[in-house]
Image 1 (cartoon, one colour):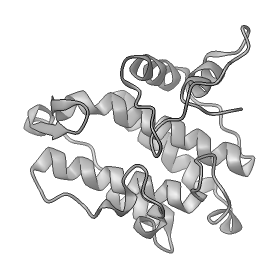
Image 2 (cartoon, helix red, strand yellow):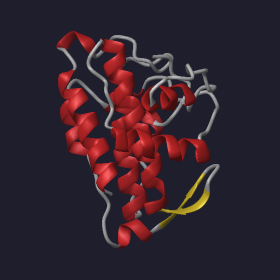
Image 3 (cartoon, one colour):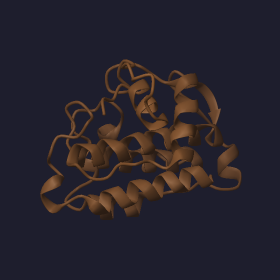
Length: 182
């Protein structure tokens, strides 16, 4: 949970750094703007809350592969993100949910996926806008470890693995594995 909270904090810091004219610029995610990436992350927080509490799933607008998740971020993506942030605890972590392609998984088993998603999207926004996007090594390591075991390569998820130079740092290798060019 410490890594998950750290990934949330890093994403929050990146969103807060987006300049006013940056929200509708293209992100590093194909066909998504920076606002779309923010909307996807907002959706992810709502989906996590639903999984953890047994509540109703949010609208699919921000789900992976949806064409315009910006609707989930609204006019103030930072406020939308901060209102949506969610950290499950106690019995919520042991609640079992069914995830397409993963089967039945306890909510605790989804936290590494969410760390990876937030970490990658923090970079996606920063890199697209020319903002510093040096990811904390513990988040890079955790994300790379999870990705090597579970990455989903299909449109709307992670792209094909790209080559990284033999002397590339861990962040560059992790991002290349997730289909991102640095």
